[in-house]
Image (cartoon, rainbow, N blue to C red; front, side, top):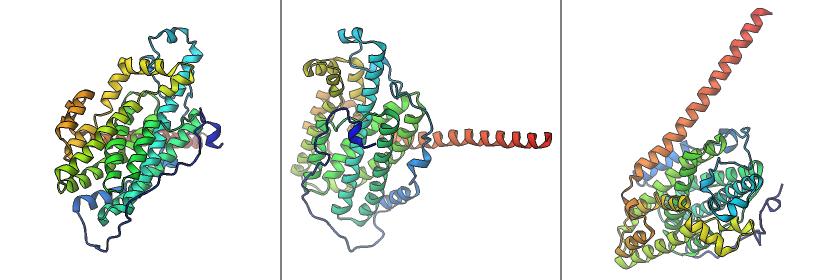
Length: 368
C-alpha cells in the first residue's frame, strides 16, 4: 500500500528538496586516527542488525491503543471536549496520537540518515567518515522499522511537523561541516532519544517496546559520536564562533519544544488551532513530558562546550537548566543494557519453548 493512502492529511509534494551548500572533503591521510572514534566505529560494525529478523513482527498491536497511552497523556483529557467523546472517539484519538508520534520519529530518522550521509561527505577526518557511514545504515534501518510499524500495525501516517522540518532544513542548508552534528546528533537525536525512552519505559505493549529499545541502542552510539567530534572541534573555535552555534542551539531548542504539542491531532478532531494550542500548553502531563525531553540535550550541549550566559538563560526560561547536571554516560549505558536484557529475556523464552517442544516430541515418540 503506498504511503499516500495512509496519510491523515495531504503532505503536499512527496519530495522535499533542500539546496545543499558546503564542500565535499576527501582525506588522503589513512593513518589509524583517534582511538576512541575508531573503537566506536568497530562497535558500529559489530552491532549491525536486521530489523526484519531481530524484531518480532508477529506480535499483535491494537491500532486503537498501540502504546497503551493513559487518558492523562491526552491533551483533551479534563477539557469540555473530553466529556463529549465516546469510547470509540477516545480510541481513535489514541490511534492518532500514536501515529503522530511515530510519524515524527519516522521523518526524523530519514533526516538523520541524510545528515549522517552529509557528515560522510563533509567532515574532514577519515575516522569520522568511517563511523558516519555505519550511522547512515543505522538510520536507514530505523526509518524502515518505523515505516513498517505505521503501515502494518497502525495504518495511519502524519506529515512531518513544520518545526521539525524547519530545523532539518536549517541544519542541512548550513555550509559549516559541524552543523549536521549539532543539529542532528545533539538536538534532534537527543530529543528523540528522550522521547523514545519515555515511551519505552512506560508502554506495556511488547512490539513498540522492542522497536524503541533496539533503536535506542544504536542512538546511544550516535550521540557519543557527536559528543566526541564536537568536543574536540569546539575547543579550537573563537568565542564569536561558539556564540553563533549557541544561537543555533537556542533557536533549535525552542523549535523542538514547540514541535511537541501534537496540535495537528486536535485539529483533525475539529478543534480550532488556538484552542488546540492552549490545551496542549496547559496539560500538566505534556508539560512534564516536554521538560523531560530535554534530559539528553542539555547535558550534551554543556559537555561539548556550548554553555554561554545567553544559552544558560534560555534553559532557565525553559525550566530545564538543572538537566545540565544529568549523567549522560549513565543514561547511554542503560539504553544499551536495556536492549541487551530484552534480547536475553526473549531468547530465553524461545529456548524454553523449543526445549518443551522437543520434550513433547520425545514423549510422543516413546508412546508411539
